Length: 84
Image (cartoon, rainbow, N blue to C red; front, side, top):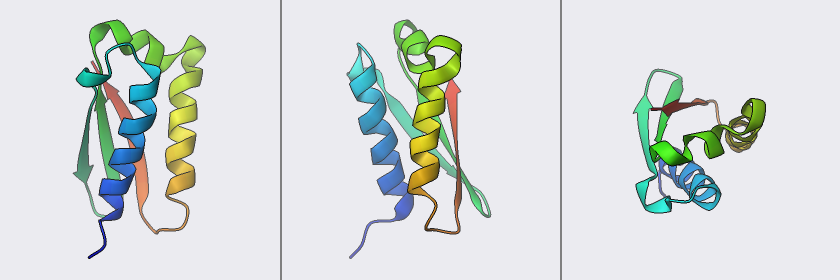
């Protein structure tokens, strides 16, 4: 039985963000599915919020680019939101 693509993407986002923060145990990724779009909600520790966003948003932009690259083969669209 094959895992769903959303689970793989969720694991990918979790893996990348845990490597970037000081408190990896507080990283949470939730998937909210729509018709053709899946919204991934990312929560990190308040201290790690600046690290995950990066200077001028470069780090979160890079994570979103990885997510976009991972979804190119499927017809699904994925969006990553950082929640405070």
